[in-house]
Image 1 (cartoon, protein in one colour):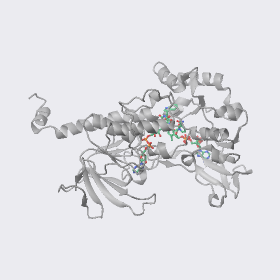
Image 2 (cartoon, rainbow, N blue to C red):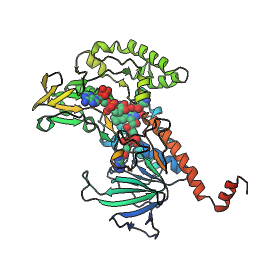
Image 3 (cartoon, rainbow, N blue to C red):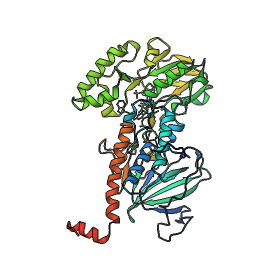
Image 4 (cartoon, rainbow, N blue to C red):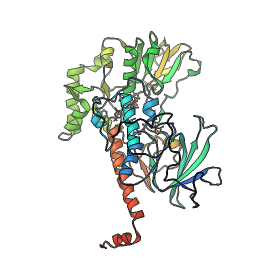
Length: 454
Ligand SMILES: Cc1cc2nc3c(=O)[nH]c(=O)nc-3n(C[C@H](O)[C@H](O)[C@H](O)COP(=O)(O)OP(=O)(O)OC[C@H]3O[C@@H](n4cnc5c(N)ncnc54)[C@H](O)[C@@H]3O)c2cc1C
Ligand SMILES: NC(=O)C1=CN([C@@H]2O[C@H](COP(=O)(O)OP(=O)(O)OC[C@H]3O[C@@H](n4cnc5c(N)ncnc54)[C@H](OP(=O)(O)O)[C@@H]3O)[C@@H](O)[C@H]2O)C=CC1
Ligand SMILES: O=C(O)C(=O)Cc1c[nH]c2ccccc12
């Protein structure tokens, strides 16, 4: 893959890719689309419309291209990989080795470390979009998408040129036979419900998706709410930058070392799962973790009864892959606020928080590491394939990628970037088969249908 920049932020894209045809009702023409009567310009897209230019959308578009199918990728942000570029902290590294995070047809460039940094991963995704000449329409927030059974096409309405509130936007409607949803499992921050008084809090309250680096918290007393990978890593970053971090741990959790005897814990698990049942792999991981990390319960982090891979497989909850926070918890540099009952924080006070056990403490900042949620229910007018409750496909992996009427989901497997690649290959294969059939000459199609040869 060439190492080029060019699909990053602030860089212009072809806003009218060649695959766009004006007006679903026919016509043809060059620059502007037809008005559909509701004030929106209308474009017919011969190939699939892909919503989201993160790893899942880019991988799907690249796999489609490799199968000869053009697609149009829409993203609300002004660049590809916006989640990684804008909604992660500076010192983030992938926590799985790079071989498990590569997208189809593109190894990381030589010299990439085993655990690429955020900037390396963003550059990789920029290069990926460029190498596969992916047709992008950026700054295009999908406001709604619905299947029009009368014509057998998806109508995708997009606000362009809008701020976050959608003000000043122009609406455009894309009409396509196929819709690929690739807006991610982590599209929106999840804030805890039922915590009162945030408006009156005089300190800084933010979600980990806005956290950039610890040095602005130097010398400050910071509460991190939540102890998944984000909570652990942000607490560690705060500590490394001279802040005093406390972490709310409301439930039991599995912490595993990122590596065991120089082998990634994830890689070891994948290998062992080929030969052993998941319960045995979990037992082995827990035995080795105990040797390496000690008894985490002693440090206030008791483990659930069910093993880490079984929990990942049944609920999608990722175990913490420790990159150093546990040592800081052991030696007291990160203080735990262990609270078993939900919600752990009762309310904000003027200068801090009151916990559900009644004790109050002052904090200069409160960082919510409470996870993310899908935003699909806010724009997709469909409730059969995607759940309107959590915005995820109702069927779990490996059946989560294909719905009805040309609807697909890329990147909703709860299996990270490996799941993304799995989906991209399958979706592209499925659409390519339909594409080939649709574009085959009438004679060829007739012969195929008869099952005969020419
Ligand atoms: C901090 C963090 C670290 C992670 N590290 C790893 C790791 O090391 N290994 C691993 O395998 N997995 C990891 N994951 C999990 C997952 O693989 C990544 O989140 C990955 O980015 C998912 O890719 P995606 O394309 O599905 O979603 P995203 O990267 O979130 O991309 C979705 C895109 O859709 C766009 N979008 C959303 N709504 C709309 C809309 N209405 N209209 C238009 N565009 C829209 C967004 O702007 C975004 O660009 C991590 C997740 C997080 C949060
Ligand atoms: N280096 C890397 O590659 C990183 C990867 N990631 C990945 O990003 C994804 C998201 O991770 P993350 O942001 O940590 O989100 P998670 O959903 O994994 O974790 C959220 C945490 O917040 C807790 N929580 C939720 N609500 C409350 C509440 N009201 N009070 C107290 N605690 C609460 C949860 O507790 P409970 O378990 O009880 O629900 C859980 O500990 C994961 O896939 C993760 O692996 C994240 C960071 C770094
Ligand atoms: O980062 C994530 O959340 C992932 O989904 C990657 C991942 C998939 N399966 C796992 C098992 C253990 C740790 C991380 C993962």
